[in-house]
Length: 426
Image (cartoon, rainbow, N blue to C red; front, side):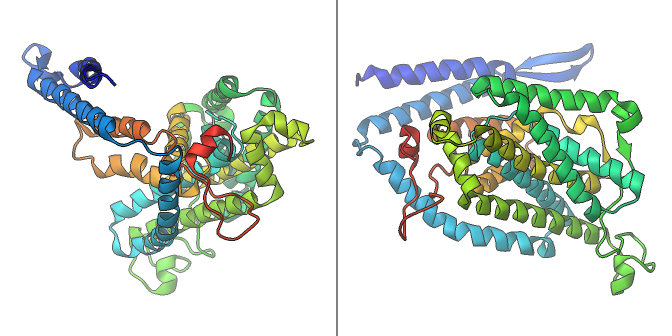
């Protein structure tokens, strides 16, 4: 490699950084006497561009002096490290999730509910994208169907949350099958476009069917969940949680109850997914992801395989939507935009396609980190975007790139590293 190559690469990186930071960081809007005034900040831009140049040059020089490693050796080493870390992280994360409400504030519990909601959505979409290999950009549609199904059934029949929850999941699964039929012959970009359109169609229908959904006004007064008929209110009347257990009424009690509901639903999603992966259906999903033509040659029913993936993934999205509706008490089409689908898909891709642990870690990064750093309001999203770019450069296949084989012929089978997956041997 030429000695000028690192300098040229660092210069080009700094040039790109200049184009990005000049409008975003170099111009600050302030309110002046005659209105909004743009104040230039050249020193801030120069500092950022210089930092990019130095860091990129250091990375290229380190890569040039690094001794070449055997093909796949690094992936195998990282895969084994992640496998060992996963055995430690899973029980730690589960114990932390169970104990967190008892030692955290109400704001932290609310954040935990939000994180678990996205974890459940990520695990549901992981079935479609990570296991079956079907790119879905309209997953928010099933989220919306579950929310509106629960709200409408609960308001018109008087049934509680636990009675309406299976119906919301079943209706979302039905719409998943409805989406699956038109896209059976589509792959890749075409499949992504159709699923994106499906999500927008659902949102527009919810927005314009005023007589059923309330249109832009949404649906308010959605019933809250109860614990064996005990309501969570700020009174200690008979029939309330505080009155039955002779406790002082507190809003934290309802927040903790909602937290454990979404935790149970998320763990149910994870358990079902892991069980299905070991069943013939799960192995067929993974075979479809690797090579659809080979699946057809082996006599696998591609139609049934795709429809089951869409239905199961949509069902869990409907469960999450029903919980969202009962937690908020109010829903409207503005809560189910394309950005929700993009966020959930980014969680699945960032965590590693097909990895359950990766979805949890990616949710903590994508949802938890921006919420915890709200104090840096001016630079929060900028830092977050830079972190994602660095992540995609260093680990383009996600946080957890290796995967454990669904079926093994012996004990102690090692995880399949990312290098072999990329070559088609996984």
